[in-house]
Structures are given as C-alpha cells and as structure tokens.
Length: 119
Image (tube, rainbow, N blue to C red; front, side, top):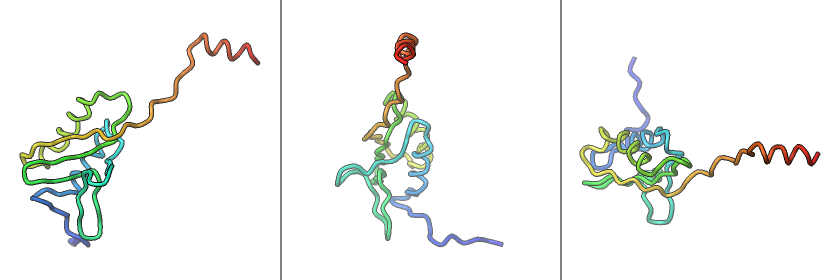
C-alpha cells in the first residue's frame, strides 16, 4: 500500500524548505530557527511561513538561536555540514540571531560553606 502525502514538499529554487528547517533544528549547537525582525529570513509558502530560512538562487540563509557556550564557528560548521546536500551548491550564510540563556551558576565550595553557616 502506498501512502500519499496530503501536501507535496515545499520546494523553492529546487530546495525542500521543510528539510532545510529540520536539518538545521537537528544540529546540537542550535536551539531553533529565528524569524527575527521584520524582513528577517523567512520563506513564505501557501498557508504557512518557515521562519529563519531564506532560499535564493545562489544562496541559502538561515537565522538560528545558538546554544550558550558554543563558539560561533562551530555553530556555522554544524549548520553547513547539515545542509551540504540540501543546499545544492549554494553558499550557506548562518546568522546567529539569538543565544540561549547561560546555565545557572553553581556555587563553589566557599559559597556553599557560607550559606550553610547562615542557617
């Protein structure tokens, strides 16, 4: 039995937009895609918008929310690696539009001792 998808993949300039969004979101250094300011990267399709992804004839732009503590070069490398087959020989521009919050600070031994003495 063959299952037919309710809607065909959204392809812009020969690139599957949903596949690009999923590949970028799956990168360990990426917390998500970011639409950002008006005019920021987005792909508009019938009845939907894919924020954070803009596909042009010779360039693919993605805007991401990167995880705290990951160097920008590593974020870009992960995204470019994830898109190497999907980008179809386009230049991939990675915009780090936001960062996750830093992890909560962990009290050192001296700080823990001071808190314990107060009780």
